[in-house]
Image (cartoon, rainbow, N blue to C red; front, side):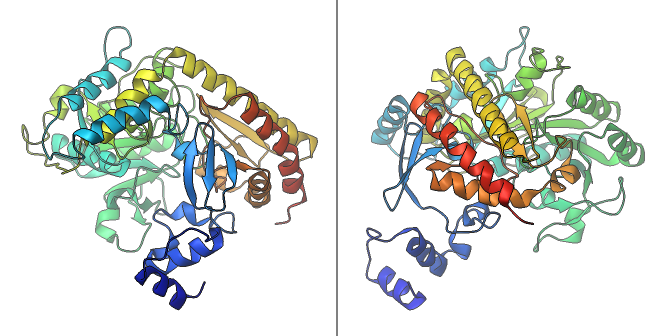
Length: 460
């Protein structure tokens, strides 16, 4: 479809019916930058034509051409129970019938905050005493950082290379020339002064953290870390790493922000923090972050996220304290209804099923790749997992980038041709859903050997 034709169609109110994925993408590029509203959707990492989905149910998504795929993206995590779960949809419909938004408080917001706090209780205490609802994970981490700076009176932030905490300015920074060197802008539009308020360190490297705090400790407001890294592929923290970050930060009067936007209520019932606090992962031990951020599952697939933590810190937020944060759609009643329904339905049986599925699919993927002679490793973080085309599991971003990433595009496209939708990047996690039944599992397992052979034949 030419741009002129696309523009004419838009002006005339052309229905999308009958347009295939390629035509939809061409039309979208005329009015949306890159044709997408989030960069990974453009298939830049794997090439080819993005799929435009029009419906989903249970374990499947369906594109504009009517083709159905078994889905291992799960809306990047929140479809924990499966797509369009009947009870979740019913609760959202009930909420919608009462009003889409009020710009005022609702009782359900308090119910969701109480439920989040309750699910995080370990040994009688929860790391989240109070919770502020926002609309996106970016907004949650941005608020947590502003809160940390406001509470400590300090400017600097420590983050880790390869960790993604949303697209606010201070988080889109890349490492400078040394371990304790202030960062450089990682995106156009970010000033050098803003980037220089961030220290970017290698993940799983406590020596680098010690060095940064030794040099800048009295200026560091907080260290922010993904509970288990899942934006460079899944790379879990080394045993004791997160607990050590808490210790080091507090020794220097700084705070520790644990980002569970992806892993919260997805890696396990209480997120990755819960797995560590209850000793369910190797080296796990009970420790308490100062602030936590949540997204994805907490909103059940609707635009909702949250920042929570100790009451004395959270009370620095307006209207009680001097740290300003606001949002017209914060705590939107439809999103809250979806989050409440999802969390209430996500019981022990659901997490047991998710772990069983993650075990089976990761094992079958590894077996298929081994049979095809493809060097690879599989890493897990609770129910999340991913494949790296490297012999040794990556421990940080530098190692993740050294893998034979060129093998993923043919692997991905072969799975897509076989009717299985994977994340369109080797640096993303795979997400299972409770709705993946035996039929869906069989389709995935059947597709894997074909994809493994395509990966084996790939050339750099």
